Length: 475
Ligand SMILES: Cc1cc2nc3c(=O)[nH]c(=O)nc-3n(C[C@H](O)[C@H](O)[C@H](O)COP(=O)(O)OP(=O)(O)OC[C@H]3O[C@@H](n4cnc5c(N)ncnc54)[C@H](O)[C@@H]3O)c2cc1C
Ligand SMILES: NC(=O)c1ccc[n+]([C@@H]2O[C@H](COP(=O)([O-])OP(=O)(O)OC[C@H]3O[C@@H](n4cnc5c(N)ncnc54)[C@H](O)[C@@H]3O)[C@@H](O)[C@H]2O)c1
Image (cartoon, rainbow, N blue to C red; front, side, top):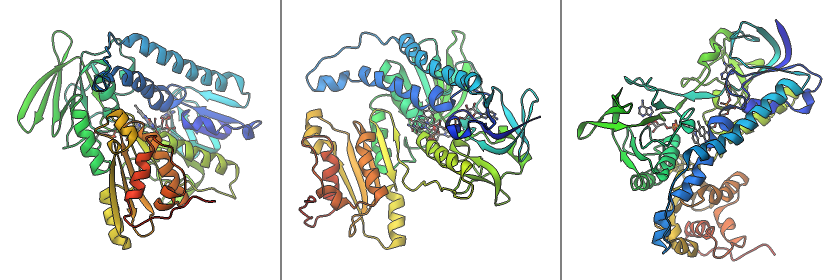
């Protein structure tokens, strides 16, 4: 058995905890998967590296509308894939080598681990590890629905689909959330024939209703979206393709595809850690129960020295949330008497599809309930990109900014943007919400560059109040 001052399970966001303050103290990093975790290897970063060239490939129709005839002669999938992973694999390997070989106080265990007691771990090869403090940063993994044929080699998740040998000609995507929306766009822009089977009546259903409705329409204009459809079975054809049987409002239908992508959510890795052996509390959805200091709980009480962060314990499966929680844990590990709390008040998120979607705060349905409870006068504004000069330049027909606010104070309750660079347009609204800047001061207390696309945000803010607004910039 080897004892450490600190043991970290998971080398994704967990890797950032090894700061210089730990020099001279014994630290174990344990990861049975690829060093660097989800975001770097199979998540945020490679997906966006595919989205960017997909935006180039997918711009021909938009260009033609503006009088520029572009043609995509070919998409060199193998080259794109190898460029992306040539970069990413090197970063992952460099990080692994640094931890494994260059830090005297750090030991890297490249294997899976599970709890055998609250402060005791056993690795897959049977090595026992104990530690004064343990951070659980073990992330989440894709969920596979129980469908006959789900284990066929042609069936992929986001873990494997980005590395396939060649661009699939026909692809079936299950699900209508983040991953489905991003890969639906990438593959369709690259020229694959995409069919998306969605159980419910809309894509991105967790989003504000206007976003979900308009995104569904925009997606359906680009690829085959089958709403209210389930996939009942998958079977291999003699030629190596897959026959899917789908059920929808018009009855069952068969579809032959070359590849199936399952994007039906991700589950926290608590089960594989045997957290029950340690007596840790688990939420209904499988997340580890933590308090605002990221302390893991047992029977409702914090367990001293046991922390969790990121997807394994967070209701937001987002990298910027995992990073924030890692900064909190990093502080708390070293300052047990001055604990810092994490904040999940205004968590923004973006879906990097076409169109892009970005949001923060309440949806309209949530804002209605909140306003009723608090006695607020809820005001909702939808401002189209096409109503501003830059929107004219783009001949934009789909982009919009939707704001929800309390009319009298101008306090923003939610902001939702769909369209070109939505994630960038959203950030000033996140800033306003976090720092308590009201919509009216935000609109008139600063210059807005003309004729930038940010004017759509300015106009949305102004539209929240029909009353005349303060004229003024700060002198
Ligand atoms: C396709 C895709 C795209 C995404 N895009 C975005 C995006 O654009 N923006 C965004 O904010 N978020 C995005 N996310 C979500 C983001 O990747 C995650 O929220 C984030 O990576 C979680 O980080 P983490 O540190 O909690 O876990 P991870 O990075 O998953 O790290 C957990 C590590 O723990 C290891 N591990 C698990 N169990 C054990 C065990 N028992 N023993 C030892 N090691 C173990 C795993 O091998 C893994 O390396 C995306 C996710 C996916 C799948
Ligand atoms: N840009 C980003 O920030 C980004 C990108 C990708 C992933 N992520 C994170 O990863 C998480 C996982 O992504 P995801 O797209 O897999 O999950 P998701 O929760 O966004 O969407 C899951 C989809 O699958 C459907 N579904 C669930 N079970 C099903 C079943 N049995 N059969 C058919 N459909 C089913 C749901 O209705 C939903 O449409 C996201 O919630 C997000 O937090 C973030």
